[in-house]
Image 1 (spheres, protein in one colour):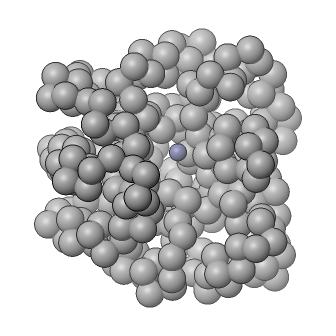
Image 2 (cartoon, protein in one colour; image 1 turned 60 degrees about the vertical axis):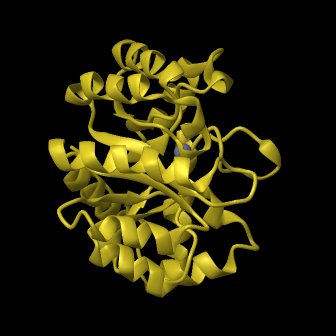
Length: 245
Ligand SMILES: [Zn+2]
């Protein structure tokens, strides 16, 4: 299985990354796409990839940190992209505590331009910003990628699909209160979804998440859709491979 979105470079994995990856592999999760968040961590991502099997990198600036990046940092991205399977994690987050929306849009547009130039898929974070996201993506009809940790309506999910973007589903759907997204999971076509942990995030009360937990997500999706889990896993792997590998 492929975890299409995790942050193995997070400090919460510093002490036991080898065990975390061994645990994932014992559960059948053997490939890990690490989404970049900050220029200060890009080098660490490269080191992790060299030291551990099955690790693939995406590079980008998370919208939460766009104000900590100048043009020189964004230019650094270019030199990293030949070794990347995707561009991201990038996007828009319009929660009130986040950086200025114009700075976010400017930073995101740089990622869109790189994606257009390189043909690489995008890993997108879109929170309370879907309408603006649609508008920006419509300017780039050739692009494709994933809306990671999607929260929204069926109509919004379908709009993203039409724009060439898959829907990333993770451990947050396991939350008994996440009724809306659970309903959506049973309505989406199987060729529209990919599995992700977003580890170490994605679990309630700040508990540390791990890539191994995507097994629970596939099981849960299988139950919701009343389908064999193997069918879900095969479809999600195929979708992820076609998009990134
Ligand atoms: Zn993430």
